[in-house]
Amino acid sequence: MTGLTLPPCGVPATAPAPRRYVVLGGRGFIGARLVALLAATGVNVRSFDRVPPPAVLATTTPDPANVEHMVGDATKPDDLRQALEGADVCFLLLSSTIPQTSNEAPIMDATSAILGSLAVFDACRRAGVRKIVYLSSGGTVYGCARYLPIDEDHPTDPLCAYGVSRLAVEKYLRLQNALYGMDYCILRASNIYGPGQRLEAAQGAVGVFMGRLLNGRPIDLWGDGSVVRDYLHVDDLVRALAAAAEPHGDRHLFNVGSGVGHSLNELLEALQEVIGLAPATNRHPGRSFDVPANVLDIRAAAAYLGWTPRIDLTSGLRMTWEYLVAAPLQATEEKLRGA
Image 1 (cartoon, rainbow, N blue to C red):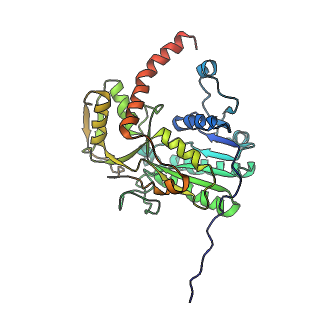
Image 2: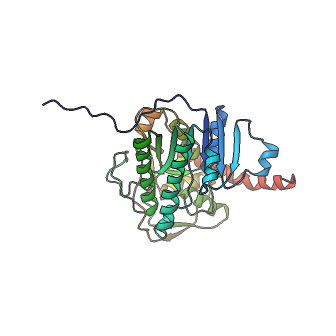
């Protein structure tokens, strides 16, 4: 008996290149840099977020004509409808929860991530959006690594509610494609860091560590420092997001990371090299939701998206630290200008 050739599941991308992009979460750490990158290519970009752009930007570095800022609430259907009107591609970057606290409030996490995303998907379908690019979590959806580096076929057994909800959103995107032909791309990103990251947040070791160092406070280190993570600079991530908006056949899921693992102890050593002083640390017992190691296999992104990271950890840390040191001076100058 000869074998059967099964047709691919889902609808491959065949539409022409899109001309209008909408970034939901366009004023966030990642979204703002994505908007800037897309605008530089000349396409029309609409940034949608709860937070308006800073007034100082409007007076000193005005946005180009192809960028539109919209302030609204993604939980309100009318706001979503206006945000998505005329859009070809929607980047879904909205998130209001973090892995560290999601197990304490799984209902809130699921409500925000799953129900909120479903509302976006429905609004996209009604608006005629051709493609959705969803930023998922390569650091949480896989759980404990059975092998390294972790490829996209690795089992998914999250240890936190945050990873469970992101995985559910991925499944709903696949369903959206099967039922309605909506094209989509999922990027499972590793640990993102870089200029503009919130220092006061409890997410992102690089941002948290640098925030402590900037304020002369010791770093809280959970466990013995052997936990390994894959750190990806935000500028490399936004290049991957932009590439994900383009047609790339019937493949819809990609890991994006540096492809290199660094322990927390190695991260501290790299910070010492960049900053020039040894960070003081407070040691605490390890946490149950911290997987021992997470390093992503990024070969599929290279093959299908033509994307590879360009910024190594030491260079990225130096760029981030220089930005943080300069930020207070920039804020003082803006106040003196009356912005």
